Amino acid sequence: MPKVLILTGDAAEALEVIYPHQRLTEEGYEAVVAALSPKLLQLVVHEMVPGNDTFVEKPGYHWPADVAFSDVDPSDYAAIIIPGGRAPEYIRNNPDFIRIVQYFFKENLPVAHLCHASIALATAGVLKGRRIAAFPELKSDVEAAGAEFVNAEVVVDGPMVSARAYPDHPAWMREFMRVLRKRSPVAVPVATAAE
Image (cartoon, rainbow, N blue to C red; front, side):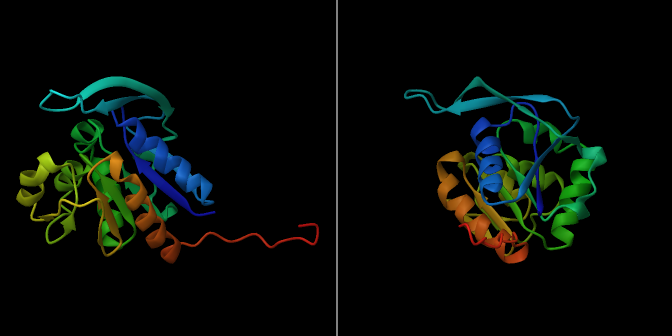
């Protein structure tokens, strides 16, 4: 069973961690959550409230991180997913996070990211010459990293699939699953006579 690594941390957007985790599991992939340390992460919920200029943040679900970035051998994984929220602000400074991300870009392997994950990819130095979607307020950050910002529900640039935020999940995961299945298909079980 191919493994997919979800790179995240405390204050990640809950929907952007849980939905991909469940979608991968549903498709027969093993979803593994990596963070600064293996622990119970505190996820958050970001919501646009009418009248506010930006989203509000509320405590969300807890979700277990299975492995520390420092213990990850990227060659064990078929792809990575980087959710948004506030986690990208601080995980981007971790040298093992950068090592993992750079490996996937160097090897041209599937990478899915959305929302604020683009700032972590910018720190890793992997966005130059790419086309990506991200949270619209990050347009100047994306462009400063040498990428083309596209305000769309999903952008596919080779094996990289990006989106703006969790409302784009259906298009984002549909395209990512297409890329992932092509590169690392899951073995389909053989039907038995009883079925």
